[in-house]
Image 1 (cartoon, rainbow, N blue to C red):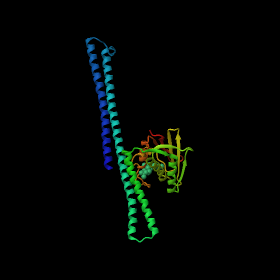
Image 2: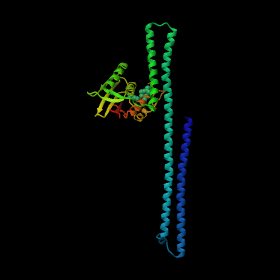
Image 3: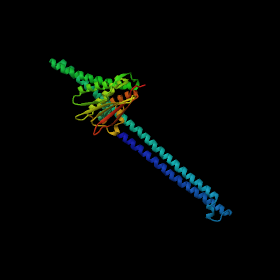
Image 4: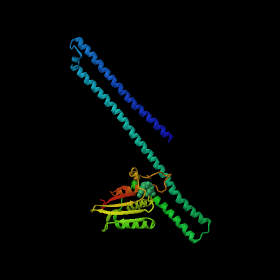
Amino acid sequence: MQRNIRLRLLSNFVIFFSLTAIAWWSVLLFTLNRDAFQGKAGESKMLMIAEGTISNDAEYLSTQYYKDLQAEYKRQEWMILGESLVFILSIIIGVYLINRGYNKEIDAAQQRRNFLLSITHELKSPIASIKLVLETFIKRELSPKHINQFSNNALKETDRLNELVNDLLLAAKVETSYTPNLEKINVTQFLTDIIERLRNKYPHVVFDFRKPSDTVDIYADKTGLTSVAVNLLENAVKYGVEKTKISTVLRQNGQEQIFIEIADNGIGIPNKEKDKIFERFYRVGNEDTRKTKGTGLGLYIVRQIILAHNGMVTVSDNRPQGTIFTISLPVNNG
Ligand code: ATP
Ligand code: MG
């Protein structure tokens, strides 16, 4: 970091020096140009007076020669001004582009660091729990009740590991080789089932589902769409506050398009983070201070899957607090 600051200071100094040098050279050129003009004008005036072509200053100022000389002087003045401005603008644009690249590089490095920290943690903690359970089985004579309890815990941890590995594989797949395997899906039933599953998993959360009276069918990839819905709903739970309420709304727009809206009353997403959350490994805040677990892959997967279906996913603020994710999908997809 110290090295970065020193490099920045040095480059700022070089840029400042170059800009000052250009400004200085421009002023110098202006002065030289003016001196040359005045010199030439003075010389030609003396010559004309000596030749008897003119008799005073006023006559000289109205000669064609003086007018041409003055036009040339003005033209050169504009040229110097133009060139200096182009130089200065080029340096400013160059500096802006370099800075932007540099900041992007820093963001990417921070994300890689976040990802490594979170993935190491996500992998280590279930492995440690499973190891502990197995060691306990070896060392102690346990009652069937305890064996059952410990085995269930270990199974939950393996599920977590499995989910994580699946997320990693899916993220790699959506980046390179994902094409939706289209089949007819009754979205009303599909969402009802997923929400029911999550109601059982998170009994403390209120799930609300509004749907049109007619069933809504679309052609889409069921596995992909499941991942989208589960990721968004799990996020709504994960980034919720006390008394979490998650409202899902399904709407159909004519025969062409459907909308799925998932709104929560959670912690919300600051405006400046709204674009970034769809990037791979991006998580709001800092890994050292964050309390929630995750890899920052969920929304990346969501966006890639929706884009592969020629749809769109957007994020906005909920009122009075929370976040709304809206997905639009074509009914027929080609
Ligand atoms: P995982 O890969 O396990 O899903 P994650 O939940 O951190 O990890 P994403 O689902 O991609 O990753 O979300 C990216 C970030 O966006 C989250 O870390 C969180 O900061 C923010 N975020 C996502 N959904 C919500 C939400 N409903 N409310 C508030 N913040 C959210
Ligand atoms: Mg997530």
